[in-house]
Image (cartoon, rainbow over all chains, first blue to last red; front, side):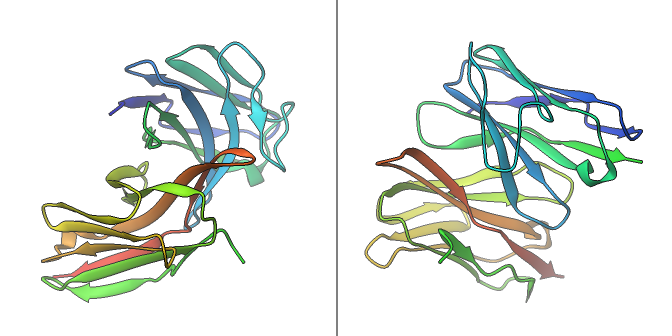
Length: 113
Length: 113
């Protein structure tokens, strides 16, 4: 299994600012993903973080709003740009290893005022 | 038809009861089936992982997959208040469009002491 950490665990931000969330995996993984989870809701995939190339975004999510980096096989960042209160959510990083299972980080709880 | 369907609950049971959680799916390409447990304000934790049809047991938890019916179940025996969480089913497989990994919406379970 993979152990995943995220920083920060939570933050309160002002409208119009940006926040970068870091995700670190304790071993090399084939794929990394970013999800959003609204309170009481299921997981919504934002994008797949590709190592060495641009992320692959799901419908409804764009690079200008959620730029993603993945400089190596164990680390990725997600930036939430020009935030509004609608961006308040839990942001989760996940990783997939050799099998078709995914492991999740503890999440970053974001509140935008 | 949604790709994965799961009763959102909430499901309340007394301590010691047997709990049955279920998901149905429509994509016959799914080969890997998982159950995640998510406590409030935490990231999802991989609970059970099954490949193809059959049963898998781990302590008080049993996962069943019936690919012919496109139906998966998670049974929890001797349920405890600490089992109170949201349970998400997930499944993955490769089809003509590539790798497909889908989560159910989750079932919220409360085990009452």
